[in-house]
Length: 325
Image (cartoon, rainbow, N blue to C red; front, side):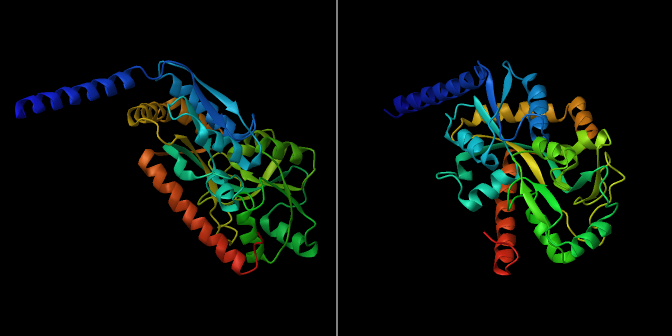
């Protein structure tokens, strides 16, 4: 009897192992949908498409990018959460996906625990970019003018309370100034608004503004990075100008929670190889994006630690009356 049970258990284990191996070996057998929550032509879209392009060369199927915009990334990420957890639907998340949407409870059922985190790909410091004919040459110039004209200088942001807005609330308190904020749906819309002088300044990353900076149609005032961005070495940091602000976003990849572990691992390995491809790293450097790899476990830890840290900061700002929700 014991021998029979032992044989049965052994056979069962072998069957499970074979099934797991087969599941991994057969994946993927069709194209993978990658949902990008920002508009085509923007910085997040560029990163999503580029890393997907290199990742698919390490898979037996293609990855196609679908832009599902609006709602400060919420609808797109919720679509990922709600999709079948078979590895054929992925999505990219940015700061607003992790902070703004759950903080404001914008979408019922939106829960970051409904995702399996595959990897983090980049991080980006935010800053102030203005058009080429703007009167401000330095951050001090902007502060002096803003004190003379409270709430008259307009800044294009990606939603209230988000990564492009919240650090400026901190800066207003530090510098004793007030700006007027105009929300836009994506970085491409921000860039266009700046070029059309709909706004005086945009709050964005070097990567997202790289196209308008490269042509000379825009120039930077200051960036919230720990040191000058090598793709825009002429733009000083806020720290250099006397304001200890290092703030920014990131781009990570996630799948619906419940995806089989072996499929998640296949995807993680494909994106890791894509990240380490010299051509991807060269591209990231060229457009001023900081490549910043984190594996699945590191990314999950980063998401929830960042969420807790920023929420505490926002709670403090609300309590002080600096931020209104």
